[in-house]
Length: 150
Length: 150
Length: 150
Length: 150
Image (cartoon, rainbow over all chains, first blue to last red; front, side, top):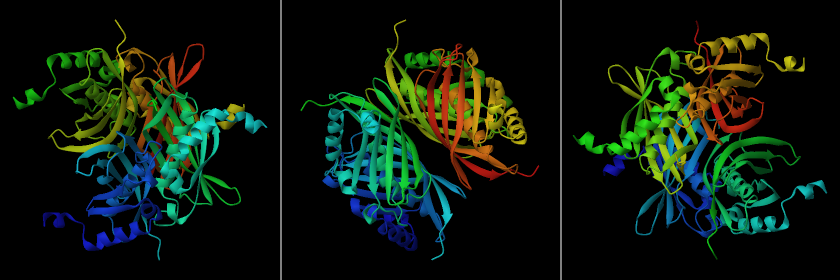
C-alpha cells in the first residue's frame, strides 16, 4: 500500500516503461525496470555470461549502462510529456567486483533545474539470499531538451 | 610497415586478445579490438539495434563500455604477464549523439605508476564514408593488481 | 554528550588538526575544521572577498578545496599513524551559487580498502540564520601511502 | 609575431582580464592569466607557502582552482559580450605532486554547443629551469548563461 503510494503516476510509469522498451541495449542485456518513483528509478540486471568481463564478474560497462539509464529515467519522472533528458556526463567508481545473482541500479535525483539535473547513481550486487553490497557509486549530469514533434 | 612497428609485441597482443575474448559482454555487444599498441588500444562497435537507446543512437552505456575496455587494455599493454588491471573509476562526457556506421573507442595511457594508471578515453562516431566525429571523451583511473595464480 | 561520543579519539583528532594546521592554503583561505568523526570530517569557510569569483559568490576553486580536504581527512581518520592519504582524483558538481555566511564541506567515507578509499563530498551554503542549501556534491578517490620516516 | 596572431582579439582579452581581476580568490592566491587565445587560456600560480598542503607541495585545491578558472575563461573566449559561463562540474586527476617554481594551468575547449561547453584541463609543474611535468589532468562541463543586464 505504502509502496504503491510512493510510485510515480500511471501516466509517468507508462511513459518511462515505453521509452525503456525502445532501448535495444537494455533488452539485449536483459535489464528491466523494477521501480519508477518520482525522482528515483531502479533497474535490475541478471548475471549471465553475456554481461561478463574476463573474470566472470559483471562487466563495468554493463554496470554503468544500467546506472546511467536509471539516472536518466529518474530525471525524466520529474518532467512533462514534452521533455526528454540526455546524459551530459557521468562519473562512476567501481567499488567492488560486481558479483551476485543480479545487480540493482538506483538512480536518484539530487538536484533539478530548468536545464540541468544531477543524479546520484548506486549499483548493488544482490545475492540469491537477498544480501546486498554496494558495487558502484556515481554522479551524473543530464540536460532536459524538448521532445521533437512526432 | 610503419604501422606494424607501432604495434605491441605479438605476446602482448595475444595476451590482450585472449583476455578480450573472455569478456562475454564485448562479444554480446559485437565489439572487437582493432589496434593494440603500447599504451593505446582501439575497439570498434558496429551500430545495430541491439546497442541502441530509445532514439536509435548507440546507447551511452555501450559507448562507455567500449571506452572503459579500451582504456583498461591500453594500461595492460604496459604491464607484465603477472599483472591485471581493474577500473577504479571513470568519467565520460557524451558530446554528441553516437551516430554512424560504427563507433571507435580509443584508450590512451596518460600516466602510469606502480599502482595506478590514468587513461584518456575517446570515442568517435564513424560514417560509412570514413567521416569521424568525437562523440564522447573521458578520463579513467585503473589499478594494477597481481594476477591470481592459475 | 552524544555528539562527543561520535567524535574521533583525541589522538586521531590531534593528528588531523596538526596536519590541517600545516596546510598553508587552508589557513590562507581562512578555513577551519569543525568536526572530526570516524570517517567524516567537516570544514567551514567564511565568505569574504578573498575567496570570491567575479560575481561575489564563493569561487568554485575554494568550494572544491575545502571539499577535497574534508574528504582526505575523513579517510585519514580510519588509518593509523603510519599512513598518509593522497587525492587520486575527484569530481564535483556545482549545484547552486555558493552564497551565504559561510560554506560547510562534509567529507564522508563511502568505501575503504587496503589501498583506495572513496569519499562522498558535500558542500552546503549556510545563511546567518542557519538555513542550509546544498551547493556542491562530489565523489573522490584517495590512495593510502606509508608516511615517510621522520 | 606568430604568437600575437594566435591571441584572442583585444576586446576579448580585455573582457576576460577584467572578469579575472574581479575574482578575489585568484588575486588572493597570486594567480595571473598569461595567455588568452580563442578556446584556450593559461593561468600561472607561483609556489609559495600560502598555497601549500601539509607536505609543502601546492595544494590540490589551488591546482584545481586555477584549472577550473582556465577552463571557464577558455570557454568564454568563444562567446559574445552578453554571455557568461558557469562551471557545471569538473573531474580532475592529481597525477604527481604539484612541485616546482610555479604551476601553469591550461584550459582548452574540446567541444562547444549552444548551451554546454566541455573543456580539457591540464596543469603542469614548471621548474626554474623551465622543465615541465603534467601534474593534473581533468575534464570540465560549463553552461552558457545570459549576462544579467547591468
